[in-house]
Length: 112
Length: 117
Image 1 (tube, rainbow over the protein chains, first blue to last red):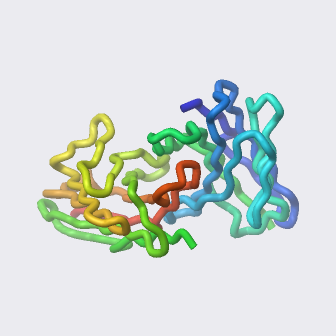
Image 2 (image 1 turned 60 degrees about the vertical axis):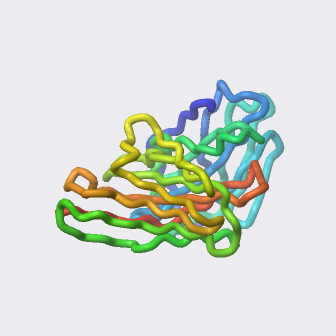
């Protein structure tokens, strides 16, 4: 699976949009981008995933560039409870290998 | 939907004890479950893939005789840490994916914090 690169940390203001970048320049055409987050001392929580189209759900929006080499997770109105480590992961679509490889992620701190 | 329950959430036991951790998918069937380990200030490391009705697949460097995995039904996988020692103290997390949907996300339990004295 393609490697991803994320900034190690980000500070965000409460109530503002938080834009989390992820670089996956070696992504293949059949690899999905998944986003998870892990709040301290809990298991990871699924946020969103996409292949090439932008996606939106009740938690966030995922913007994937046209060349698919990078993506941005957008939390539209960050709250203090969004403070967590955010992981961007890519894996092959439709394969029988469902393993997820977690990198270091981005530690997001939302400040009042 | 897509809830994964892990039990117990916290275990403290003496060195040499074997500890069993359960992972259940509550509202879906999971042919595949995964077991991860996370040390303080580190990311999750995959230990093994648990397949219903067959042997688990272990990642390189993970001792299969030390970490016994059983996936006897479509909703339950167990991880047994045999003869646990202080270096096995860690945060153990399971995840499950719904059977039949190849691109659906994995859903994670809330983890088990294991402390070996």
